[in-house]
Structures are given as C-alpha cells and as structure tokens.
Length: 162
Image (tube, rainbow, N blue to C red; front, side, top):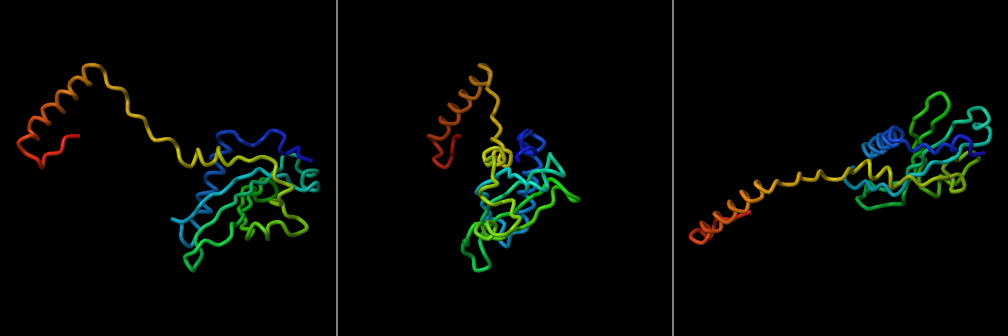
C-alpha cells in the first residue's frame, strides 16, 4: 500500500517544495504573524490512487493561527497532493477533527507514515551565520581598541565600549 512512500520523499529539493507550501499556507492566514506550524507528515494515498500511480503520495500540514476574533482556535490541516492532474496543489481541509472524516481523507491519522516536521522547520529557519574566527593579529587589535575605549570611558561616562 505504501509503494509511493517507499522512497521517503525527503530530499533537499522535496523539503524545499514543502517549505514553499508552508509559506503559501502562511500567506493565506488572517493574521500571518500568529502562524504556528505544528507538524508535517508524509501520508499514503488510497489503494485506488496507488494502483494507478505507484509513486503518488500526500503531504499533510497541521498548523494554527489566530482566528478573526484574535484568539487561537483549533489546529487545522492542509493537504498537498503529489499525484493526479495538478500535483502540488494545496487544499485546506479544516480542523484536525474534520480531516479525519470522509470516505477519502488522505490526512487521516491512519494514513500518516512519516513525520518530517523537523526537516521542514529546519529549512524554514536556517541557522544564523557564524562570524568567522579572528586571526591572532586581529584579536589583538580588537583587544587594544577595547582597552583604549575603556581609558576614554573613565573621563566620559556616556561612552559605551562594546
């Protein structure tokens, strides 16, 4: 049944596709600043779809955001299908509870196969760049400048040495 997921779709290019989807979902929010991505899962398709398209799979995004009244409501689900006529299309499914109902509901808990939340969040928030290490000469110059600044700060309390 999980043939489409056998080769877990978590390459760098795939993760970037999922990141783009998160940004698209984020942009549709009433209050985008309150958007919180709770989890991202790869999900199996139905047996009927898998029979027609063995590499088919879905991605389910669970998120929350402020509602029109300014408070957080229930978590919601968005589904991205990678099969059919329009692969990559995102569909908003409603609350997590609503996504569990229906004859064909790919984001049902039983269809979730792989949690890729950490990979997607890491790609959304890349680590801050690390400052290059100073050479011994540059470190000595910086220390001397700081010492000179401290000498001047004795006479001028408004001077701040960093």
